[in-house]
Image (cartoon, rainbow, N blue to C red; front, side):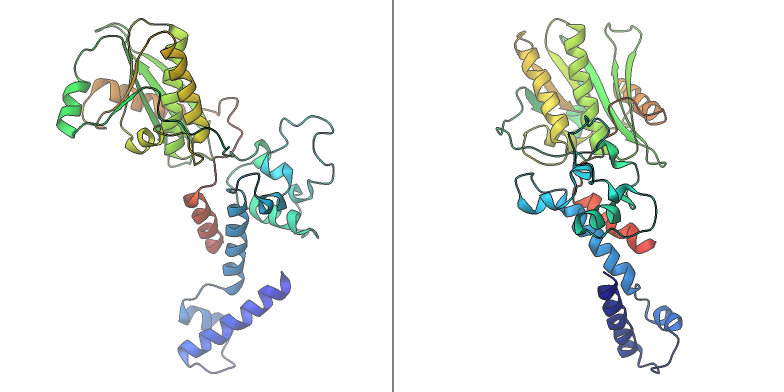
Length: 317
C-alpha cells in the first residue's frame, strides 16, 4: 500500500509539472494548487474504498465476495458464541495500525468511512424465484391520479411515505382514516442513519400492508404513495437494492389475497393538496426525527450511489 501510494504520488507530481511546465524544484503544495489535481494518495484511497464497497455488492456465491471478513459482511451484533472466527475483528480496532492481512486491511479502510457502525451487518440480496407483484399496480397521469386520490373507494385506504432529513436520518410514515370524516391514525417508523429515501418509501409500503393484515378490515386494500421509483421496485423480487422490503411487501399481499382481499398500489402526485398524502408526509418527517427503532442496525445495500458517495467523501478528506 505504501509503495503504491509512493509511486502514485511521484506520477502525480510528474503529471502536474508536465501540465504547468513549472520548474522541477517548485514546492509540491504550490504545484498541486496550480494544477487543481487531487493528491495521489487521496485518489488511491478512494479507489480502495470503491473496490471494497463493490465486493459487498456481489452475491455470496461469488468467490471474490469471500475476501472480506464475515464480521463485516454480516455483522456480529447478533452472533452467537463460536459462530464467527475469533480472529476476524482486527479491522474493527479504533487505532491507526494497518492490519497485515488484505481482508482486514480492506475492511478497516471501508469501515472508517461509513456513516454508522457496521456491527449490524450490511443488507445482502439473495437469489430467489423471480415474481411479479401479487396485486395490482396503477400509475395514472397526473390529473387522473389526483381525481382518484380524492375520491371515496370501497375497502380501506392507507397512505405511505418516506423521508430523509438533512441530518441523514430517515423514517417512514403510514396514515389511515378508517371512517370518512373520522380521526387520522398514524404509524411512524424511525430508521436512523444509513438509509436512503428509497428505503424509507419501501418501508412505508411494507408497513402499510402489514398494518392492513393486523387490522383485518373487510374489502380491498389500497396503498397510495408518491414515489414512482418505489412503486416500480415493487414490481419484481429481483436481487437489487430494496429486495428485503419488497419481499416483505409481497408476503403481506399474498396473505391478504388468501382472505380474498385484492391489494392495489397506486401513485398519487406529491404535495398536491391530497389530505392523505399530506398526513403521511408529516408522519414520515416525525419518524425521521425520532431515535432509531429496534431492528434497523443493518446498513442499506451498497448500490452504485452508495459506492460513489464513499469514493467522493474519500476525496474530500
